[in-house]
Image (cartoon, rainbow, N blue to C red):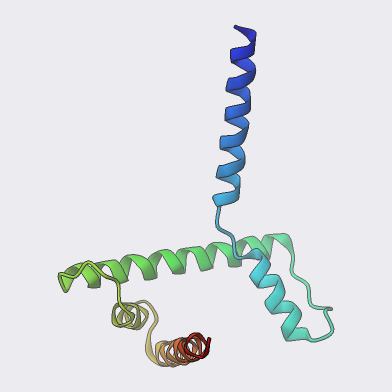
Amino acid sequence: MEDESIYVRRERKKRNQINLAREASFENYIRKLLHNLDGHGGASISEKALEIIDDVLKNFITDLSSEAKQLMMASKKRTLTAWDIQKAVGVVLKGEVAKHAISEGVKAVTMYSDITRQT
């Protein structure tokens, strides 16, 4: 009976570790971006500001993905395409910001496809 409780505790511990590993966070990317912007590695950010920026990014990704899903379902397709993402960015972001985001995204996809063709 006691062996069973040890087994159950081990399984719970494994499940908790898996759940912690799956939690998405942009904190490392934000820190790397700050390091690259400053050039000398002197730029820093408080933990509270980092949490706020992380939450903003998570909300943006959630809004973008739900809008892209709605566009995909409206066009009666089962595959999410680049067109769906571009239109979702245009809806979620407005004006010049959307135009710049779409052009940067197209540029990134083009660079990626060029690199994958070479290998």
